[in-house]
Length: 171
Image 1 (cartoon, helix red, strand yellow):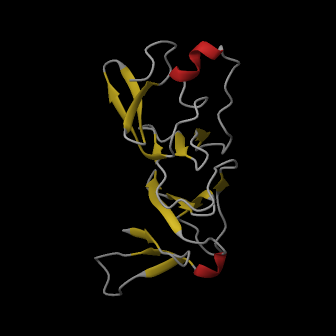
Image 2: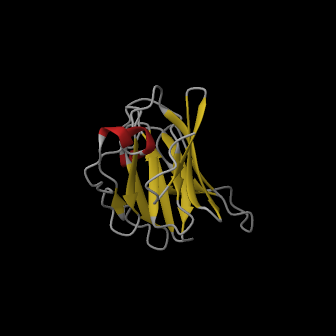
């Protein structure tokens, strides 16, 4: 089990071992409070901080502590709860920002997803071009026979976006 602390360290607990925890990332890394920790592909650790850092680390080679990838453009300065999710194939990470926007990056290259030019009428149907009324505090991706959906909670509303489709919209 992995957990982030207010001091900026990331710890690992293994119930098979007698010791309490193992510090993977020390507080001296300059992170600030950790707001999200999750594993990707069993060997990567996705870490987000209150200062807007969004990075992955290789769990196989943690000494010295250097990020494997940094996802530039994640927007946060003080919000503790922002939505972060990874697609089922673990190819992309989606993150809500303090600026009430959703951004996405490739987990393979670290590059931000670039969107083609789009008409103003399609803004509401595209989660990456929309500015929500409140920060997106929770996100989740589901698969169904109709495709992949990104669910985003902002304010008191739950939004649904069909990823990879040109119609359907938000609901």
